[in-house]
Length: 113
Image 1 (tube, helix red, strand yellow):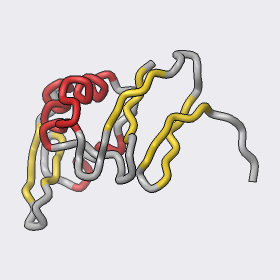
Image 2: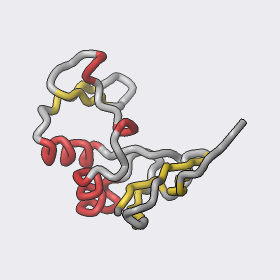
Image 3: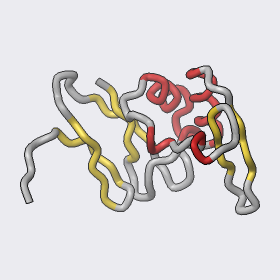
């Protein structure tokens, strides 16, 4: 199984080019809103709080996300991101752990507090 992670400090994010390619692959209607801050907000279908696209909500094993990162390489990286694709065994239950934006895939285990 392939999983997309951010492999450097900074945090997971997609470039504008990557977001646009992802929307095209998923056949979602892309609505963009340029902000005075220089950032662009992306919406799925219409402008509204309930339709804001947040790449952090994506499943990291999403086949379209993996394809975008594979196709675009470094051009898929958002601000402060360095995305990579890691292979893990298909039968492993996993989660993503991160420290200051640097991520790794870890096998699930039990934890008590």
